[in-house]
Length: 529
Image 1 (cartoon, rainbow, N blue to C red):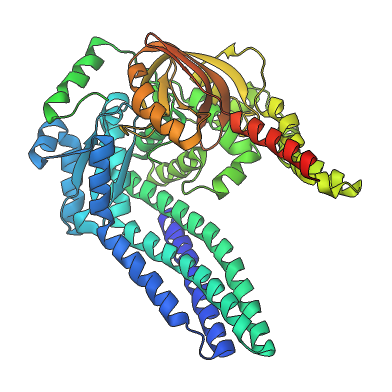
Image 2 (cartoon, rainbow, N blue to C red):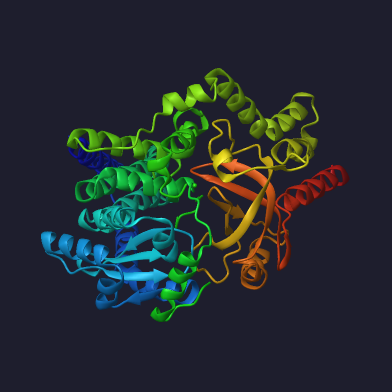
């Protein structure tokens, strides 16, 4: 029932995209007669087809160069990870395609992903962290999720859906150009259809994101049909929320050493990680508290709207429904009980949400006030002043308070706008982009879990690359503390202020350019009015 509903949602969403494109193409042909849409659409199709055909090999190349990816021999997978090997070959035999290759990235950030062309040449990539932080059944559940994407042919579907959205933009671009050289009556028709195409393009982007989310639910359902749903749920709690408590014991070090024979070295693409060791079984209440944000915070719906993945709390609830249908055991993630424990006030959450929307809009409101007062020439300076005034609210400068990953993730009032100044004690264990040699963002582990740490250089993109290449590596594997501003989005992350470890200090200036550009705009506006 649940799977059928998801397939129907995917079919309807894809059908809407097809219908929008065909309808607009036909309308344009009727209105313009000889508008050269064919060439533009043909080029879009050909380019997307070429990208689709070569993308797996390009991904192989870049992941090998920049992320230390190594593909494992089938015999090696069978020897080291027999449960995963059996699952992969069983699914491949059941659906009659060649078993996907297994890639390994030596990074402790626990994540897995898949890519490819067709079922028969897919790749599944896993990181060292998958084997370190997840139980064997959780590992199998995660791999089964990736196999679900392969079985459901999501590579092809998402490529085609993305191409349809691009065609909508091509229609807008061609029609708006053509209407300038057409007669007045015909040009007006073309302009209207072009505007409708542009509106369809923006709607199509969100339809594409929704389609992606339904494919994630379907991949979850596939995993739940192969491995008990509770195992994928507990893996999601660890990977997506980061609730795992694993110390660097001798057993852990033995695991790290055991992977070196594979020819690798100790060095979203899950972006947000951090949470409890076999924790979801031992303490589902902590996971339920982490789900409060997904369930009750008004920001959650907006965040998911712009995401390719559903919120983790909703995925776990979906897995719970599947477990109930199957009559299987499932951890008691009682979100309502967790809300009662923390005395959650939904009215207060909505008040905070509205205040933060106002905070985001404040710079534009400053500019609007300048225009209303007749000083429209100073509107740019007023907007820049609004940015400066709101900065202390988005980056509070008070002393960071000691915190833990679990406590931060359990805060239903966490915000994607206003940072909470905190200090975490632990170790930088890997990179947010697993194994990426120039990745500046790191995964920080404390005694309760893992947290993504977002480094932002005052030199922008180039400064980030330099830091990731030269400065970050010496901190990986070192004990210390990370201070910054905690924010919550699809998961939790820390906007870094300073990372202090045994290897030294790494400081960031996350709001440097906001201050610098605002001051430049204010000075320039005053000088040249």
